[in-house]
Image 1: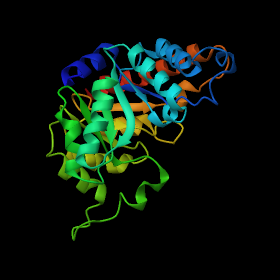
Image 2: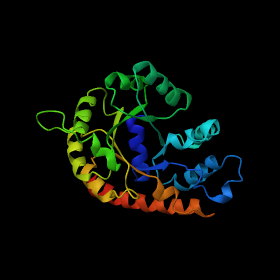
Image 3: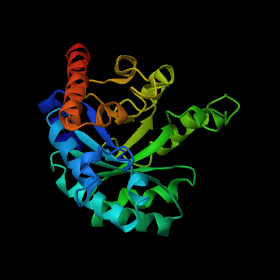
Image 4: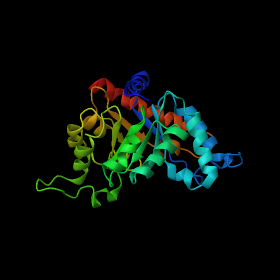
Length: 272
């Protein structure tokens, strides 16, 4: 998917919502467990209920890997079911020596047809470059994550100027590809740091987890980092897909997605 196509979806739906498909088999409503593929059936109904309000979907690969071969089948069916106009993110957090990264890229971009993949930058440029060789595909580089342990390493200073590691990662990696191929993961739990990050990469999209269950604020994120071209994909997982576990779970998920989209519409009108 090109940047222009992603922007078209954002404008069409007045939304920068990404729905995280962190589908835990232990949280799937019980009435779905009798189906042949409960994980896919859950995802299918969530997608149907939220597709008018979401521009992107982000399956967390661990929830599928944990189910073995059956889980990979559920994942592929899910990716195939997501409308092609929606941006798809393989939340896989890969990154390894070059020839290994090339195999990861082939798996997720060619075999599974994801639009993007999250990549850990710790091993440096040659571990990321194989993912950048695919036209129309995106790398979403982990920069400053939303978890409580993010400060263990990501905030360590790496120069005499006391530049934190996450800033150095962004400054260095931003030269590896353009803003039409490279995004960054920045947690909603760091709104003050997000302002500085936006100054470092004024035109790149930021994928922002941590709104809702992790305590991040959509208002704070939007104020800190929205641009004239929006530049944000804000992810919500648990707050939408697990809003209910009864037979009405999908319609309730749709209501929650609409509430987020309506709040986003207000910020789009205000800032864009």
